[in-house]
Length: 83
Image (tube, rainbow, N blue to C red; front, side, top):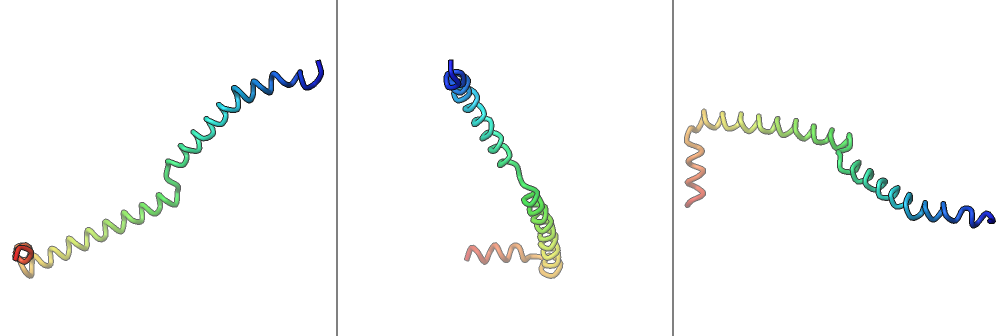
């Protein structure tokens, strides 16, 4: 039995059994890691949420000012859209 015949069976077993399992597990782990958000993405989302909260507060303040100055502004706007 020379060296080629000695390594032939383990090489075939590796290529048929171990290599496909290894490749499948590798790509499953890559897929799972790509699904989660990166740290930069999380920081961007947090920044956007803070901005949205500020904008909501500004809209509420503007609506309160309009309600105080022009109590029927909401009804006037809805009647303009109809005519």
